[in-house]
Image 1 (tube, rainbow, N blue to C red):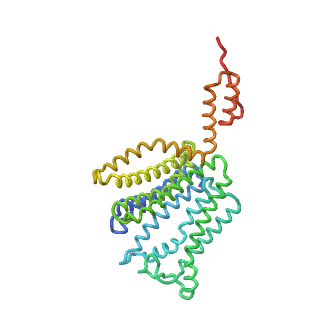
Image 2 (image 1 turned 135 degrees about the vertical axis):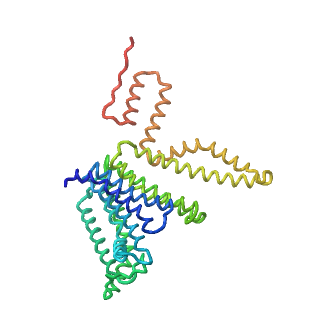
Length: 391
């Protein structure tokens, strides 16, 4: 079957993932709440993104890997729920062994997707060998985990029927290094992405920026949840809703970024998105800190007069509203100066030229300066200026 024909049936992947997600509450004999359901929908999202990429670019391996990620994670979650029933079900033991064996190396699919993104090919022969080694390590570790004797880690009510008691000590020692294997896979993926960023030019660099943006958002969301955890219970109520929604967005972020980068990269300017994200994140932190500081200061200063009338909060709100415009302008200049130096220098050049233009009356001098400014800011290959003759 040709790649084009394979791409036409890629839509099967999100359908299969959706079926497994729908079976999850049936298998578990209990409904799942909205937050958990939202997170499980991200499995379908990965499969759908993979199907879109495979349909448009069937030779790009990233699309097929995303299809596999969606199906593998959705089916794994459902199989895990099936084997968790204490009373036992037909085939539950085999399902539990399979899930236990593959859980240690579930990261191999995302790792390969990162190593191949965005072109669908390894960066070099060296990285191809690294990818093959990662696959080999994952397969070997799956065998070690499948042969480890004793109760299965996620299902202690089931003992591993494939366990080799004669090699129990060696297998226990090997599988105890599973966190090292997982960490090694993550480091390999990070090194591959960084090396590709270092070598990328033009379109590929723009595509990689979308993935970097999603990773940055995920890191910021995790830091926010970590800082919020001492003050809000993230396991129940409103805290669970916030934490679950953010984690679902963090997990879905790479899939959305890959879809935009590969399929619709020409519609958006990623530099503008990153610029606005930096500006408004810094602005939110600045205004939030200023608001809290002003509220505390005014409450201390006005407490003998106003008691609890809310005057301090009202005054703080007005003060922060007045700071919005100046603070945004200063932060925008700081971000441009630090991260977008070329744009910042071009803007300064245009401002200086506008100031000189008001006092300039010599047409030849204006023409010369205008060509110089255009050449410095826009950097075209050729600059020419046409003047309309007087009639």
